[in-house]
Image (cartoon, rainbow, N blue to C red; front, side, top):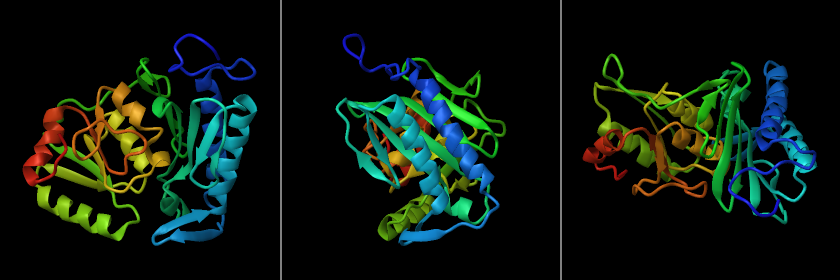
Length: 272
C-alpha cells in the first residue's frame, strides 16, 4: 500500500478488508479452542504459574498461516511462536488463547486476541470469545462493536457500584503489590473480579460490563486486541502514571471517565 492514510488497515493480497481477514482468523482459532475444550490437553510450563497447552500452539499456527497468506510483508508477533520479520510498518500481535489456565482446567472463560499495529499504534483490535460467540472489534476512528452492535463504556450504574476487574500475572513482586493495592482501595462500594483473561477484562470494560480493569504485569499480546476497543468505546487506557498506554507498557489501568480512574489515586495509586 502506498500513499494515503497509512494508519488505516490496508487491503490484503487478495483484496480483502483487514477486518474480514482478522475476523476469519480469530473465528478459525476459536473453533479449534472450542472443539477441544472438553478433551485432554498437553500442558507445559513456561514459568511460575505460566502454562501453555498444545491447543495454544495449534490456534496460533492457524492464525499465523491465514495472516501470512493475506499479508506476506507484515510482521507477526505471537505469544507462542514469537516474532516473524516483515518489510512493512504493520505488525499483527496474536494471543491465540488468553486465559490458558482457565482453559486447561475446564473453566469456559477465555478468548482469542488479535491486534494490528501501524508503527506501534493499534489500528484494529479484535477479541473473540468462542464459548459465547462474542466478537468484540474496533477499527481506529470507527467505533467499537460487539458482533453487529455498537458498544460503549459504562455510564451510571444502579445500584451505584463500581465493578473493577484485575489480574495478577506471573511476577511474584508485582502480584504482591497488586494484592496490597487492591486491599488498600477496596470498599463496600466496589465489586472486585479476578478475571483470568486480560483480553476479556478489557472487552468487558469496553462494552460496559465492568468499569475499570487493572494489571501490573501485562504483555503486548494480552492487550493488543483490547486497547483500541476501550478507546473507540469512549474510555481510556493509561499506564499507572496517567500517560496513554501503548502495547509495550507492562502496567495499565483501563476505564471510563477520569473521575472514576482518579478516585483510586486517593488510595495512593497514581493513575491520572
